[in-house]
Image 1 (spheres, rainbow, N blue to C red):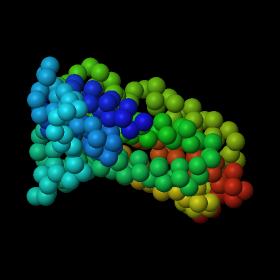
Image 2: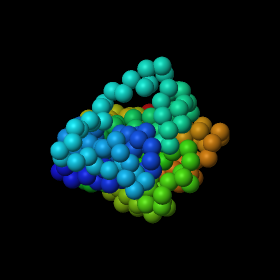
Image 3: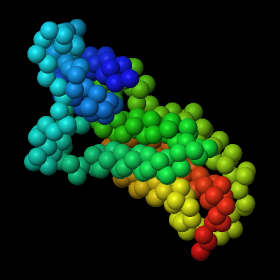
Length: 243
């Protein structure tokens, strides 16, 4: 599995263009670095991109630590250096945190009915993070833009999941506190982190272009997480904790 993922990462690196910085950023965004420790990239460009190193060559991996951010700045996709408190970095960092919170919620209820959906959502959030880390998406190749796109069909999938989950719940007549079963509490936490990610993306959109679908997706996702938290309590035989 690791070898397959690494080869996919190398193939996509070749499409990133002639800069090794682009490739490193893309690998960090899309592929676990520990899977790259035995499959590395040659320092010689080939065909406009980086090619896999030959088995007989001296290999140098992509390390977890690069020391390039020790002064408080980082690289966006494309190589532009910005401070780590840049609005764009904050936005994709908040999305990353929302993704991690959903991972915790999945671990809290691994047999939950929404686990497969949440797994798809984590992939969507990874794509959204990559899109937010890319200030000039027009510079990407078509297949890269497709990889990072979260289109209206994904928003519709969230809306359908909301409608389906709500059909099995009692009508909501009171404000609900973020409490109840461990699975519900974890989903409520993920919801609040998602709201924060949405606010960060909106703040960025006031200064720089952000795909409207990203804002819609994050807004709808927090609604879904709220409904899934209520569903988790219902499945655990726990009533909503109302205010």
